[in-house]
Structures are given as C-alpha cells and as structure tokens.
Length: 285
Ligand code: SAM
Image 1 (tube, rainbow, N blue to C red):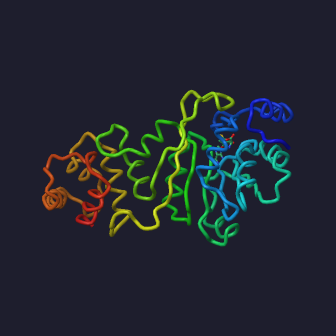
Image 2 (image 1 turned 90 degrees about the horizontal axis):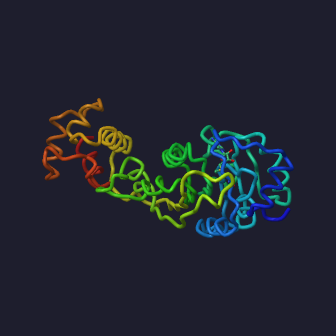
Image 3 (image 1 turned 120 degrees about the horizontal axis):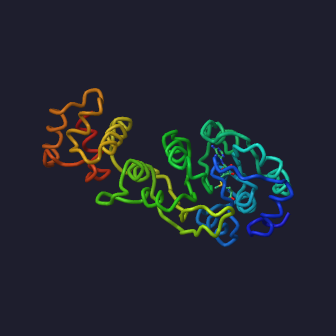
C-alpha cells in the first residue's frame, strides 16, 4: 500500500470502503505528506521508540510512524475505521490497533505491555472536541511519557504556550508549563485536511520535564487553586479562592499568604506565574 498522505489516495480508500465521516468524532484526515513528515520529524521518533497514536483515522500518519518507530499502538474509537486500518497498515508488523475510546484506555497498562514500562511518545492529529481532556488526562495520570506531539486548533496551541498578561493565559497554560516544555513546530492550513476544518491548526510538541520546574508540596492543591482562580478570573484572588470552598483555604489565610509574598490584597490570580502559584500553594497547604 502506497503512502496515503495525499488527496487522491485518501479519496480512493474512503470510496473503497464507502466511509462516512462522523463530525461528532472530530474526523479531519491529513492529506499533506509534507506536514506528516514534519510531525514525525518534530516528534524525534527513532526505532527505539514506542509511540501511542490517538485517533489513527484511516492510518495516514500511522504509516509514517510505523516506518520511523519500533512499535506503534493506535487507539481509534470509530469501529468502522478498523477494517480500513487493517488494510492500510497490513504491511507493518510493528503496529497494534485498539478499538477504544482513548479516555477510557489504561495508558499505564499500554506502556507496561508494549514498552516494558519505559516512557512512550504520544503523536496524534487530535480530535479537537476533546483536546484538553486528552492532554490533561495524559499529564495527570503520571504515566511514563517522553513527549506529546499533537495537532490541535491554533487557538488551543496559543493557550497552551502563553503566560500572564495574555487573555489566553489560563489553567491549561499553567498545566502545560508545569508538566512540560512546549513549542509550536508548525502552523497548518485547513487545506491540509479532508474535510477542511473551519479553523487553522498548529502542531505543538510538549517535552515532559524530567524534574518538576517548581517546588510544590501538594500538587492537587496547586491545581485546585489554579482552577478556582481561572473559574472566576475577573475577581480578586482573595474572592475567587475563598468562594471555591477549598478545605482550609479562607480569606484570612489567603491575605496572610499574599502579604508574605508582598502582593497587594486586591491582586488578581490571572497575573500570577507558575512559580507564584507554587509559592501560594505551599503557603496555604
Ligand atoms: N490521524 C488521522 C489523520 O491525521 O488523518 C485522523 C485524525 S482525526 C483529526 C481524529 C481521529 O480521532 C478520528 O479518526 C476519530 O475517529 C478519532 N477519535 C475521536 N474521538 C476519539 C476517542 N475518544 N478515542 C480515540 N479516537 C478518537
């Protein structure tokens, strides 16, 4: 089977199987071999790597991954794509296709089974309707991960990469910064997909930190504080946190912590850096 990364071959496969796109699964298939090569190159895949691909579609990127990696595990929710994948990937003996919802898959068990518990790389053209739960789920599960290289909506890539002072700064930006070093490696036009999405896309590579970038005594508390802050981002930090009902976090304690940090009482949490949230969390914990 020749590479699928162009419009003609993709359409031929779709017609052969009379495939009907399901919008609810965020199905936009890549048809640009230049972008496909760029993603695999940016992910730095070698034959020593085990790659988890989320949403292989008809196997377009999977073919590139199978060529570059030692092993590929591809998780696809749409059962109508499984016979297609068995066909388009029939030449490769280093791929395992799993017909499941990735949000329900035990990724740690996959790492154990397919890579002896060693860190895996995640590479995907993500379904945009669940980008944040997928990325947050990967981070919070603390499974051994080397990097996550994914196509996402351009606006989401901006949110993932930004700092205080930007309207895009929020809980996702802080989680990405806490867990990884993020870099946008490509911007991708809607013309590179079939069907065309309504938005521009970006490929972002998140390389997981080997050590935490900040000292935090209670990671769960840190993220509770961050979520509470951005749930009510226009309020002062004192108000947004005291409204959130976090056990042990009351107005007096927050005011005392701000005073220790030399911050004014009316400060908004959206101005805080990751380091400042970490300090606050350690003072309140
Ligand atoms: N990788 C293919 C490509 O680049 O051409 C397809 C990418 S398409 C944007 C997203 C893929 O994710 C679709 O194949 C879709 O069926 C699949 N998908 C959607 N939700 C999923 C889920 N919860 N778990 C696993 N796969 C999912």
